[in-house]
Image (tube, rainbow, N blue to C red; front, side):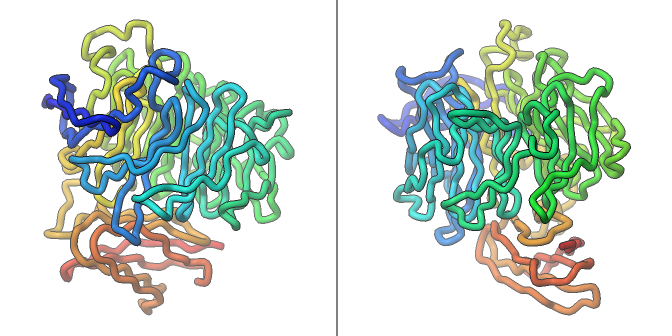
Length: 468
């Protein structure tokens, strides 16, 4: 399936182009290219890097948050056919790295481009009108390669100060506008030279440590790290780049980025002292995977540089298959049988967790794509019971100890309920339209619970474990 795109310029007027993009089971909704000037562009023509998404429950609006070579864009994608830039926060110019995550109504932006640089905290509560920069400086740290937020803790990979470096730091966000350093990984594990990226769930850290491999740590209640597993020296091991865990916690999907054309890897982590390979996969021999994003236990969404965005059905471990793709970078890669020696251009990342279900995918050179993955998802689950689709109801972490994030795509009224092991209703909340909210489970005792969503008289139940 091929699509003709509409390029949206937010600084001038709308104009169209006849560029075509190869795809299968993923449809283009629109594209926006706000960083289209000639000043402040990064090396190799890089205009965009990391992205994230944010749902504003008070206004029922969805936003794409996208790092560019000159700053961070906040884009209203509530109506994805006509995205609109609401705000822009300048950062280091000609920057080729920028990543961000959100907590409550705050966005935290890191960059690992050369000094001078800054760490930024941005208040998004006044969107869609504007945003407010709360912090833009170096007193916490100057540079970070990657960022992850788990509950009320912020993890920074490869943390650089104006006078030093730490492999990974963790900060408390108990006061979101004033992070407090809790611990540096090097205080407990000085042999780890750097953490490139980390996926954290319920204080368990899956740390991608480059050529040193994958290490799993527990961040303990006394603010120290302990190692609970590792996966190093595996067949074909290269530069361990980034990872994500299935919702049930049984499998980890990760990418080795360097050298180019490394396969994605699917491993069984049910026994962290004996992690086992499950499958390696790659869409084309020359493809370089970059970042994975998982939904539930069945769906992997992977950014693959010049070959674009791929969706995999991973529901049968060891037999993952391609469910769809969208090539954001037609000027190189498999589609033209030539990577032009530019393996690390193209699709940097994606965000598939907005309540509407659209995917934000940004190509470093070509812009920000808003994609509809419905056809790909339908080949994965095949489960739809009238109005309520099981794969559409997502929450994490599980097990949980504090907050759980609950997401559900709908335009109808719905109701979230939590029941204990004897069926007593202990929590209920009603929603009108898309659900993207947090549920505080910190006051409930350890044990098994049923979290359910009801829409138009139909209910889906899922098991939740609370473990403090």
